[in-house]
Structures are given as C-alpha cells and as structure tokens.
Amino acid sequence: MDHFSRFLAIDTTGIIILVVVGLLLLSLLGIIITRRKYKMRYKRFYRKLDKTINKKYNGNMLIEDLINKYTTDSTNTFKSLKRKGKNLTTKYLEYYIKNLPELVLIRSFTTPDKNRSELAIMIMDENERLLYSWDKSKKLKGLIKAINKYQMLTPIIAFLYELPLNINEGKPYRLINHDNDNILTYDIVKNTKKLDKQARNKKVKKIKTKKSKKQK
Image (cartoon, rainbow, N blue to C red; front, side, top):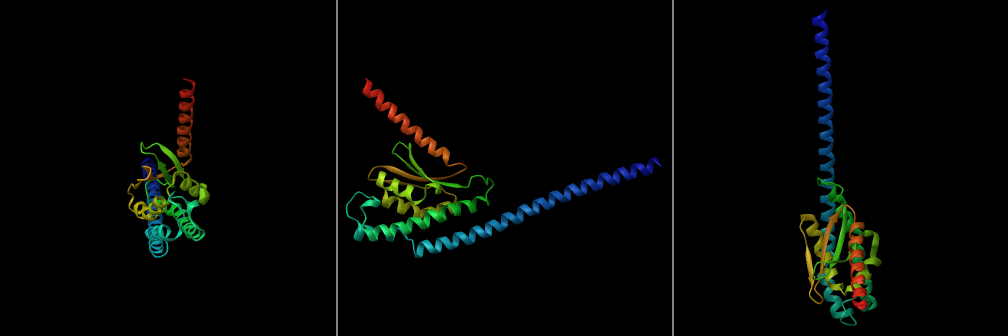
C-alpha cells in the first residue's frame, strides 16, 4: 500500500511537470508565431511605403520644384510658398505623418521592447538643446508651425524622405540645417510627452535668464 501511494505521488508530480512544460512550450510557440506574423506584416508595410515614396513622394524632386517654381522668398518656410507649392507640400507632409508613426508602431512588435512605439521628430539648436518635438498628436498643423518658426521647410522635406530607411535599419539619423545650424533628428520613445516637457523647461529657463539679466 505504501509503495502504491508513492507511485501515485510520483506519477501525479510527473503529470504536473509535463503540463507545466507543455504550457510553457505552447506559450513560447505562440510568441514565436505572433512575432513572425508581425515581422511579415512589417515587411509588407515597409516595402509598400518604400515603393510609394520613391514613386510619388520623392523629397529631392519636391524640393527642386519648390525652389524653381513655387517659392516667393528665401525664408525657407511653408508660408513663403505659392498656392500650388503649398498644395504639393501639404500632400507630401500628410503622407509621411500618417505612415511614419504606423511604421514605428508595427516595427515595435518585432523588437524586444514593445513599449518603445512612438515616433518623435526633434528640432535642436547647435548646442543640441531641444527646441521642439513633433509626434502624431500634433498632426500637420504642428509640423507646419515648426517649419515656419524655425525656417526648416526643405530640411524637413529631405529628412522625412530619408527617415523610413533609417527607421527600418534601426539607425540614428541627423540632418543639420546650415542656414541656422539647427539639427533635425528622431527617436523612438515610450512617451513623447516627456520630450514636450523637456522643451518647455528649456523655454522657462531661458525666460528666467533674460529676466534676471534685466534686473541686474
């Protein structure tokens, strides 16, 4: 009877171990299948994006057209464009601000840290202090506002055109506007609001500095 009880105990323990191992294997298989599915989805999305931008939204060609046909002055702003130039640029910007955040989101499911899924496009000064950060919540209006304020129309057009390739390869990318030495770069972050807070803090510090100088 004692031997039989021991046999049952061992047998029950063995079954529990097998069930646990089986569940772990099924869970691992599910993760592998899901990741593979997202990788295939990402590859399809990127191939379509790459084909479309080279065919319809080529930044180099747009810049050439704007400079030669649709620019009214040399301020390098959206507001300096003729009506046709504004229409072409709006269509170009709308395509990128719609598809780039989605590209980053889908790619995040193929990476170890899925929480890093938000695209931030940043404008920094020559000392690499953050002046402005764009994310999808700011939409087209926010990007145009930054273009006008920092006079970076053609740099942003060029930057957006090259950005998908760098996101795909997971490489950093920086573009310097030689007119004012402002820097364009990007990051994939968990929370873009922290970047906004950083930019606001910089402005507050600058205001306080100016006020203290006046008091002296």
